[in-house]
Amino acid sequence: MKVAVIGCTHAGTAAVKELASQQDVEITVYERNDNVSFLSCGIALHVGGVVKHAESLFYSSPSELAELGAEMRLKHDVLEIDSERQTIVAKNLMTGEVVHDMYDKLIMTTGSWPIIPMLPGIELNQIELCKNYHHAQTIIEKATDAERITVVGAGYIGAELVEAFEAYGKDVTFIDSADRILNKYLDRSFTDVIERELTDRGIRLELGQTVQSFKGENGAVTHVVTDKGTFETDLVILCVGFRPSTELLKGQVDMLPNGAIIVDDYMRTSNPNIFAAGDSCAVYYNPARTHAYIPLATNAVRMGTLIGKNLRAPKIRYQGTQGTSGLRLYDLNIASTGLTEEAAPLFGLEVSSTTVTDAYRPEFMPTAEDVQLKLVFETATHRVVGAQIISKIDLTQAMNTLSVAIQNDMTLEELAFVDFFFQPHYNKPWNLLNQAALQAMNERQSARV
Image 1 (cartoon, rainbow, N blue to C red):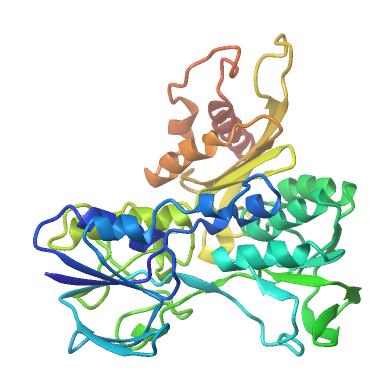
Image 2: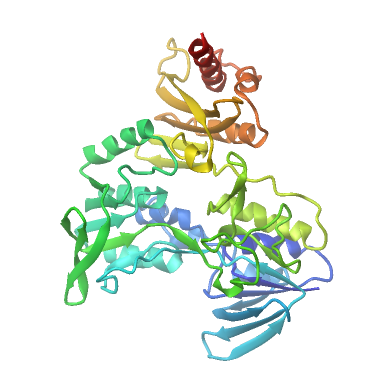
């Protein structure tokens, strides 16, 4: 069986490693870059000096995959896919040679690319993206001499970058069109805490405003212009989101309106000979019980591995995702899973919530940091659909536990009485998750009285 893999970051690397152990599989990998498996989530750690060498952010290599038996065609740009004839046309970016190939099964793991707003001045120098290894090197090089740095887009990547730049003594401005940061992951009581931390450290939050243009001198950016003001800058980092890179299959497989490929439980597209995984795909979002675009490395490696296991026949189904994610900013440990209370209505869900703020372990212990935990649940069924946590002590694994709860459609009543251990070093007799579910049940009962 001849298998072509297009794109080799997380999902592609996982698929190749899984397929390499199978007999009678001939794997050819097409990759635009000269590297594979780069962890872009580590760019801010590299910029901030926590990870000294960007090379450490690779967890595989072209040579490793070649040793496993894959033919690695690096620096090859795929120009065309004909799904009826099962052919590929690609260009060798080093020689200019055009390559024609055929496949029995195609694995589409082309990932995503940063959204680039087509605004006046976008072509100016010192406006950079943040996605791959080369971006990381460019950001570090240009940030060295920049005194004023503007980050546009207040998601996880943007938040981590502003922390890194501030730690290096830069004058940092953080811009987003939403009225608060991290609004896709956390509700307001959580983002308020983080915003105070950022502003206390001198980071300017310019929220609720839209970038309209960039101005510059001598070909380099000098100002960011929004609908509410103009900000001086020496360097701009764009972190406004990602789009799936799926143009090659447009009109050939089913997609969401944004171009994300729709796959079934076994990673098959609407074409039986084409599989897809990672940021190029929509995923089944368990809290909302629908497909959604949630680009995460964790989704990608699971889906890529499942392609390898299901390529010949459907064997192991994908269990969906909760979009579970975590973040550390300064001394705050933050994580979330599932839907926020603010996002739930966008998926047609009527939800309620409860928030617990308590010491994470008995107050008789030498220290007992406070933790804030929010539980979001369907009002009618009490099905748990989301949760968020923030504290100075690392309790983020609680969101992994609640991810399992959401995946298995647990209710408040079930979560309230799950068997969790008690040990004064770590928690209280009522575990925080039990406590949140019990509190929600009591609040619902009081509301009905």
